[in-house]
Image (cartoon, rainbow, N blue to C red; front, side):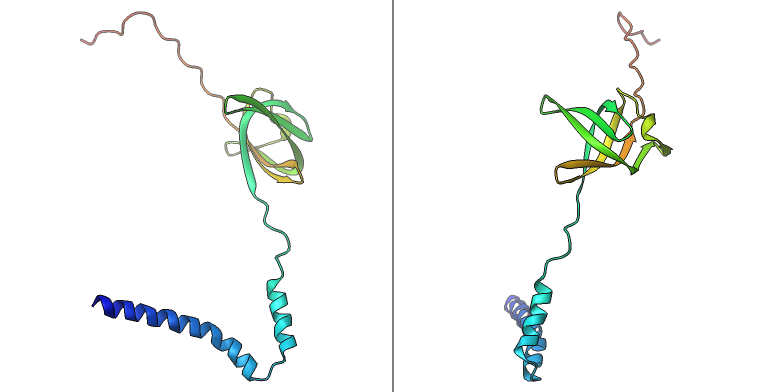
Length: 148
């Protein structure tokens, strides 16, 4: 049974390889000149227009917010790092589901910036303002209350 399944799989692989060569063989047999075949190969080999731009993400505390730029501070491996992003009219600013303006971003707020990097320039696509964290309740001194 094992030998039969190996034999069937090899037949399928061979059939697949032969199937890929048949269209080329048909064009050669039809008398299509080699120049046209080379032109088709050149067109297929040309690279795409421009590679897709990857969106990156950074989270930190706002150090400076202006109408055309946003600077955040964050810690990377224990070291303080400062990133500056350019802001365009296409940059969306949100707090939860609410739309905001770049002017609503205040220093000291925690933000997440999704950005693209093009020629060393970081352009913000979206800025998400994190809601303020509630302050931790002060711990009462002494032992915890006893249950009755």
